[in-house]
Image 1: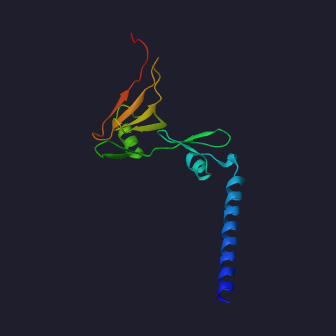
Image 2 (image 1 turned 120 degrees about the vertical axis):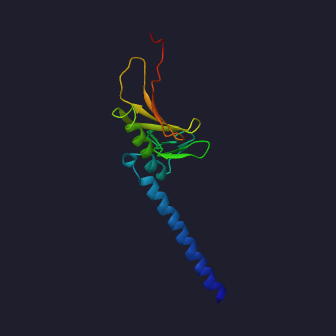
Length: 146
């Protein structure tokens, strides 16, 4: 009698497990790519994540979503959030030209925020040092400057 009860319990648990797997599979595959609008939604839909910095996720429609980096840590362990970097940048020569694009260069321990300054052959950025908490413009110019 005990064997039959244990066998019934095992069968019920197995059926529930299979049912859970099937429901999860259906749910994941029914998510439309139209609903994916950012990096987190892309990875939550089980799409592959590329090993890049910052990380990128590509959905089945070949749309790419880049991870937003909200903090930066240098090799000494000094830490800064993007909000703190923006606050420092606003109080510097970069103040009214900040764009939304930013990234952390952990090798140099700096946050780079793109700037909306027009200068021929240049793509300027405000560079905020995580350790010194100082900001300056890096013009990132190419070609010969006269």
